[in-house]
Length: 582
Image: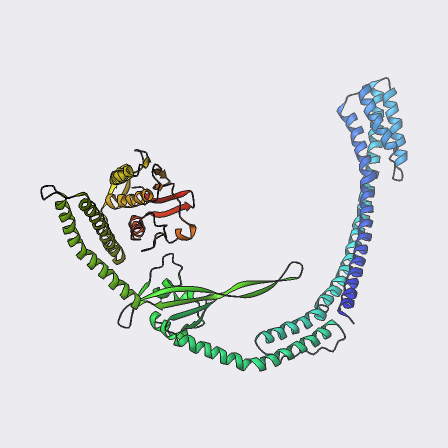
């Protein structure tokens, strides 16, 4: 028998059972309702009429007035139409006769005698109806008890049948499903020898046959690929273990997948005990591991004491992405990707760090040594220009001017190299002072005003005196602004303009310099603040050393500010930096 047929028969049986119980309950409830309605329908109305007529007699003195007679007559008429009990009609007639006598009597004594007859008739009607109420109430109570007994018996029978059905019937479906669930768990654990055996001729038997066929295919595939997979796993583990970089692998749950020898040595963790543990527990006791796994915004190398010396490592984090095939709405198979974990690589850059420090020290030493002879050359040039030493012709003056420009340029480069070496070694010294932004602007304008006049470029300054003060190194901040203005003047055509804006933002002050030159290509903008980078020129403008903007970035970031550029070809460039309010 098919599962669908079993379900139909079972639920059909339940439906018939519930319907039968409902019909029995409805039958007895209707009987009880009819008994109750008999009591309420007629007898209580009669009692109401009797009470109204007695109230007329009790609450008014004789002779009765027309209004009181009308009330009495109205209730008497309704009582005559509501006679239901044996003997009640005679009592109603006596009541009617008594009321007529009261209404027609001439003397008070006659009315009093008729009043007693009337009250006697009222009492007799009331007694008849009260007795009927008690009798009918007994009938209703008996019907209620009988209904309770029959409904209770029916409910007990239905409960026993339903309980038996609930206990036994789900086994037809649940037991095969439980066996399937158990078999699937075994398959998920790699037990491909699991088989199912059903003797019923239903869908479960067909499904078991298909399951057994699948398990057989999986067992064949496992036997053919297991040795190959194991050898590949061992080969990959050997490669990772022999790599010169420290490598840590995590799965998507945050559990350690692998940890090579170098990583185990650096982090001071036992690889065998660590693999399989969750990193959320490991980082509580290992600060270095916490620093490696925690996302960082900076790209500074990690300094770790290893091999009896301080070593530097560059951290790289790569997410492991694998294909993910999921069935979307409409049974459509969509190919996507999902994360399977992360790999953290610590590259040893100690050798490069040492070379970089040696380079920095060399630049600092050479720059410092060059400043002395360059200063002597500048002094000699100043003496040569003095007429007291002797006169020079025009060609000699021109050559002397070229020598002076080149020496100034060399002196500027050496100063920039010294500043750069200080920034790289962390020895950048700033003299912070609370000052108005206008003072920094005036300092920079004075430095470039002569250069602007030579090219007939108009400097437009927009700076309010009531701006918030900033805590900064006045000279170095002005140097950054001078660098912006010098570059803007260099790349601006004659008789153009350069705009210097200083505006108040939320919690900070923004300085900006805008020119209307050719602009900077977008592909060069991200590298403008890199050391030694120079934007290619057409030869018309002399390029600098490629250090000015890099040093400007070091200065501004040391003052807790931010520096950036916005530019477009043909629209000019705007250089910005911000400083926090004092």
